[in-house]
Image (cartoon, rainbow, N blue to C red; front, side, top):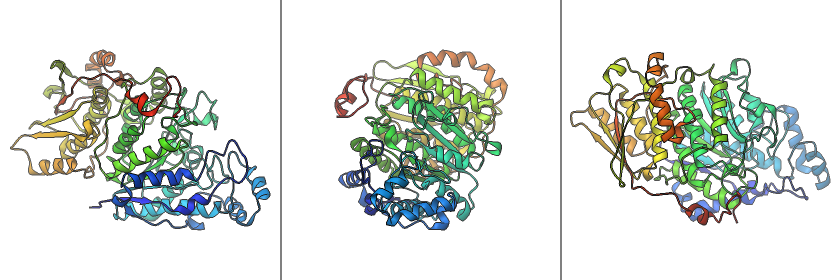
Length: 542
């Protein structure tokens, strides 16, 4: 089994820089890379990773996505003077050329493909490539938004061609819409593209109608393009987690990818002048952890944006720590997505309902809540034999993604105990996935209680999950019955009022596992604000 986390960095990519005054482009600086790498060194993460050297992407690899005309223009800039470079750059929206830009962009492509090779060949189980220029805005025939070649799109085409992959998930958590990636794959059902982005009803760059929630793909690609537009600034940890629970993760598990690529822009993090969002670096640890449960752990994270150096570098470190399977820090803040986020999430779900089984047949969950005083809280999902006598794996997905994770993250436990009894129908792989998903909580303090007569294979699988091993394939999604949906709708509505993270959906199902979650009851205070020197009402770091 593959082990280890790859880290790819080449200082030469810092030689791409702006030579003239441009207030739009002056935030894309070489220090984005050097500061991030320096912070990884500070936390002693570099020596824990597997060093993989960057290489130049070949012209043939670049042409998997881009036109020969675009490639030739990029090549021609290598011997240009400053005035000519400025003139050519002016042909594009928010882009600048330097004599070394073409070389750096080829290194960015090659570093990304080196990471894909390392993961697919089993040399490592996951990894991160620190690259620039970034890529997700670049289109087949045009540079755009600081991006020359679309590193992640090239990686997806490369992986399909070299390794015969049929399902690749691209997660774009940059604060800008990766319209270049969308254009490249909008008719391709082999690539599921998810992007959340600051949109503000088409007022925020790139200000495209096709960045809205109703742009679901074209032709055979309908349903495989997921846009989640943020229509206000200040989105925080709970908004990002709600988007994963109620949109991305259910679609991703139903899609069942063979490889996950992340367009990892940290301008969606707190303090960034572009995004003006409030998500802390810790949340990127949790997002990374969730994606590690897919594709047997085959996860490649590729840097995109991020323009506040402290926020960027800390978020990069959180991502790499998680790839290395370090305990995940607790996410901060009240777990209640804002009304604007709920509206966007519900709009996406409505737009994609014709294309995804989990949306067509989504159910709810019977749950008993009982108090244990100020020091603890218990929620229990019991085995309702009559309701679940024909249960299948779809019940598990609906319960865990639609109910357990939102409620558990709302509660923020300090310890998790999972008791696995004899009456279970979701299989060893489902139980292992449950352990994997919940390990993001309570700083990975999780205790398994398994009946002594249980299958040895079950105990071995749970032990591997607790040790951070990749979760085994759980199988294809099967829709719920309408009968189950109807039986529990009333209770679902009641639970939404108590647990705000359920308000985006409120639909889940039942699972044959008892889960006890204990927590010392504390209230969220001003620690976050003081820690990050945030001025209340603004989204900047000082």
